[in-house]
Amino acid sequence: MSGTWCSVPVRRPAASHRLYCLPHAGGGASMFVPLAARLPEPVELRAVLLPGRESRFRERPYDRMTALVTALADALAPELAPSYSLFGHSMGALVAFELARELRRRGLALPDALIASGRRAPDLVLDEPPLHLLPDQAFVAEIQARYGGIPQVILEEPELMELFLPTLKADFAMFETYRFVPEPPLPCRLAFYGGDQDPQSAPPMSDGWSRLVSGPTRRRIFSGGHFYLAEQRDAVADALGADLFAEALQHG
Image 1 (cartoon, rainbow, N blue to C red):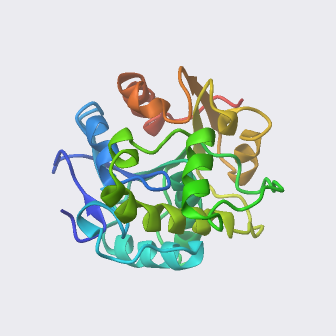
Image 2 (image 1 turned 90 degrees about the vertical axis):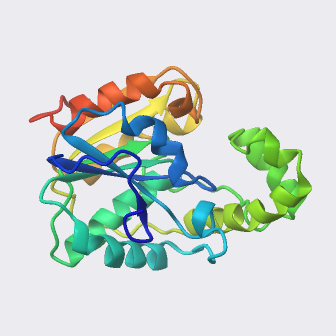
């Protein structure tokens, strides 16, 4: 572990770049472990471990974005390398974006690149009923219908589900109560990753990300649904290796 907030699956002391990875709702740092060894040698992956899951499952999960981003910025600020990037999947993309803005407000080093995966643009407002207010059974059913992201082993084991649900509901409360506040575009490059079968990644849902940075942008679409990452690890690692060190990404 690197402090409480990050795990480092493959330590690379000579790495010139750090990639901080933030998970989807209900997800943990372990989802990024398979990527760590696949990345180029100059990159050290640091998987962000949020409260309420894995080794921090006894800690209360955050249910508001501002509180989480403040705590994350406090924790990561002392260890930010001169060259680093942020990669967030689904909820993690939103957290990564707000973390970068919080670091800018503090006058700290900003990421070279923001990699947003499987999440509609933060400034896109949709009139959807919040899921985190639903009774547990209806909540689980709706999550499975929309995303299919709850592991089968948890669905089949009531005790595991009892442990898992509070964290998942807190995560949904965090991004369902989130309200975008306009700020100047972040001065970094951006790449958007998504699955070709994922509605969250389809235009116009994801198009707005390019408005939120002043640097060049790139769009990469992989085969798969919302959780394409699990099936496309090699392709994602290759894309990250290219995008983290790209001097100029292509627009579009």
